[in-house]
Length: 416
Ligand SMILES: [Zn+2]
Ligand SMILES: [Zn+2]
Ligand SMILES: [Zn+2]
Image (cartoon, rainbow, N blue to C red; front, side, top):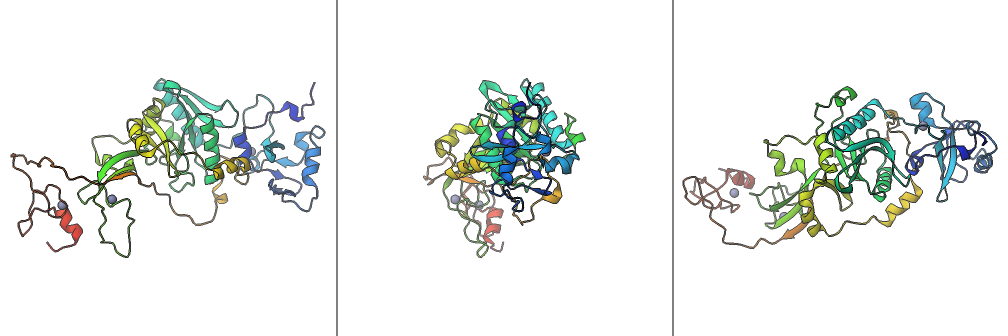
């Protein structure tokens, strides 16, 4: 019979959780800094050696290590113990085999998990809440078994977490072959664009739990558009020419053709009022069915309809590999980040930050070859002459009887 308090008898958490756990040393009343040799408690010399020597001799719950999040958020005293991964010390919650993982999740977080699991099951996709990846490195909030071997991980992320921790957690999922859908409600979240994501409104749990209530996807899904870079085209300015506040009226277009990856809510599709807004349910079901795929471009992540995927690949080349900086982050982890899913607002970082903007990315630019275009024809079969400013068909004429768009004249700032 094993000592009920020895490490042999207890189940450490997944690596992902370990990297996120803070740990408090109660006798000093402070959190440990496990990256430092003195653990950040210099007044207790040799603390690390002392703690390590307690293994197998002192019961886990009498070593002075507890989870500060469980204490502050749940009012519970949960013992922790140190484990080593790749030569780095990390802290795990103490729980016996078969005991559920400790969770600091809010009701909104739980409601999202339940809602997405139910919606998936209703559409014929098996969904499991709280399941670990086979390598034990990540714990998925909702694991959805899609078509053709697709495995989705749905991860509501309502609390703050650093971009570095988000990238790390995403990497555990990618390595396990998971396509993640990180769901952020905060438009200022550090994880936006750092992982394949959607952004949805911050709704109360009671609203989320009602399956007929739509949860609108507001960001994270992109589309490919092949656009002519001209005033008559679909884009507000050339994506290769940043807005110049010194010279706001300078020519904003290059006249070429761009294949661009753009946020759907900024694309021409957004003006198509005949289509209803994309909901989280439809997004998840389509992603499980393979109709949406995650992409990474210029270090930015998002989702793309898969009918545009081949075209994306031919312009983008194979998927980008993660950099060596990314790999070292896996090793080092981010142990200063809190382990909690729902970190109290008072713990929010104070540094000023600028709001994340989903960007348009140019995949390919081509010169426009003048072609004997079919003349545009109006309803009575008469050819429509080109606008003298943008060259696109214009059925109105200006005071000098030249074909012209009203909008083109306005852009030029000329008196009408
Ligand atoms: Zn805890
Ligand atoms: Zn351009
Ligand atoms: Zn025009």
